[in-house]
Image (cartoon, rainbow, N blue to C red; front, side, top):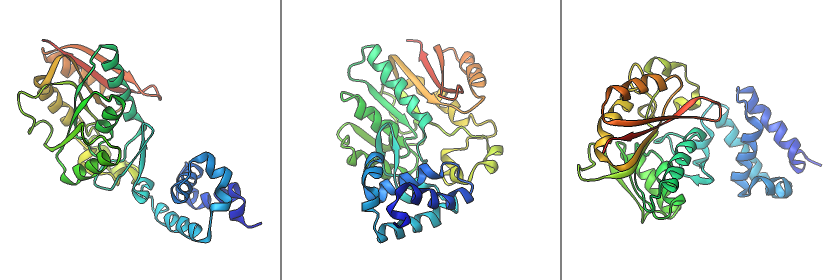
Length: 289
């Protein structure tokens, strides 16, 4: 019996290449690679993977491992990333989505459902690959979504995802630096964003995989709050009565953001949600009027 005929042993042996490169989730990544190449889910990988793993497939695995061992993100090698149970097309033009951002979508979906907003109008600021906008449109079938991004390349990726996931009739994409191209009369029940929030001084110490994301989507000035300040300044003017502004934040940013909110008389509610690691992650704001 060859190594590839006994799949767990094959995975363990191939994972050593990634482990040697300092990749902690080596086995999980091998499973992801094999599921991608063999076009199966994880269950069927272990049920039928040994019989599907041809010599050509093994050579394909080896080519991917050579690239991944250089710490090139697996999402960009495979051109796919999973978010909220859906597969998204990604390229180095966009930031690879993270599980933390799923919490933002969960909060928005829950708010619309519990506050009786049957057909929510949603604005996604800095849409990137479109995961927030497309997830909202997919999960709330009656929603209408405007997704904006300053990057034309990112918008092309997001539009491709919108078509692939069949929500192009309810998500419109627009090139805009934050809300600069959103007209004064456009109002939204939910204004959502995963803005850049990493401090410039911290950028050099980021892992290679993170630094493969577009820097413009990650860093935001000396304190990491430049983008948040723009959202706090401009978003209230586009928020419908009873709506909410929700955005993701970085570690240690909830208190300085709370101070900014308190100094702005337009906000009448402030909520901070924690992620699965008990870190403050999602800010939810309501406004007067």
